[in-house]
Amino acid sequence: MEMTLRWYGTGHDTVTLKQIRQIPGVTGVITTLYDTKPGEVWKPEAIRALKAEVEAAGLRLSGIESVNVHDAIKTGAPERDQYIANYIETLENLGKEDIHMVCYNFMPVFDWTRTELARERADGSTVLAYTQEAVDALDPEKMFESISSDMNGTVMPGWEPDRMARVKELFEMYKDIDDEKLFENLVYFLEKIMPVCDKYDINMAIHPDDPAWSVFGLPRIIINKENICRLMKAVDNKHNGVTFCSGSYGTNLNNNLPEMIRALEGRIHFAHVRNLYFHSPTNFEESAHLSSDGTFDMYEIMRALYETGFTGPIRPDHGRMIWGEVAMPGYGLYDRALGATYLNGLWEAIDKSHTR
Image (tube, rainbow, N blue to C red; front, side, top):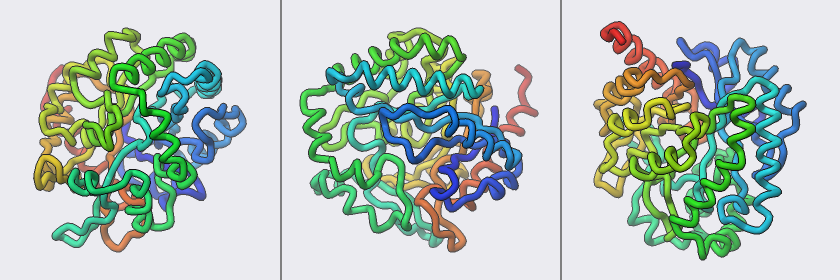
């Protein structure tokens, strides 16, 4: 595996490439062209400039998170084929620059949902948190307003102000889309893009829905072992794969995370490994990566990845805000650096105690 950190780019991220380079064992970054909108073609010169900046810092551009999928594709609108053509052109441009992993999601309206961005824990750190009861009491059009004051002056992915200004319009787009129709539209999209993925050896890695159940009545399909395995069979191509995000699948306590990893052997192209602490099945918060600080057995998650031969990029996910840091919630330097070091330590211990 390759340990990486997510980086939002110069001008968007409080964390610098120089700082990332100094985290022991971190050799690459996962990044994006942050100023592009869903449906736009990524220009070759912009990709080259991004890659050159990363490599000049002594790191590798290990993958893209994300090339966002336009809502016309997700809803199966008449214009979806044009947006798919644009997506294919972007993949071709990435492939020509020797970039071979793309994380994406197929979540309607909200890419991910949290009700708090700075819940204070007993140790004084602040974390992202979710309670279903808070969601049930909210008007979805007020969702962005309810959390925007805690974004620390950053623009969070999936919660861009221009997108949030269109929430009512977006809900209207999805009013006739149920789980099955969304699944059909996802399969249609994947079948169209697989030829360019085959040509350039690009691994598409779908990110699960977060949380792993319907929010505001919207369809959610990438939520459990049954659904993700169905998708792997529906488009049975090695380039159709998974971002295994423990913190997203893990929002549903019925999901056995190590078992899911083993069921997806050979199809996990990217891993987000983080821990959650549950107060109840519908009230959880991000925790430190350490197993004992949360609910998940991080050793067993890493062992399952190791024993299934995972070789792709991995990154610590949402960190706590600690030691007075002010950054994009979940994406500061300090706690993610601790997480990367901890995960690397687990991997080393597993490697030294196993013979494959």
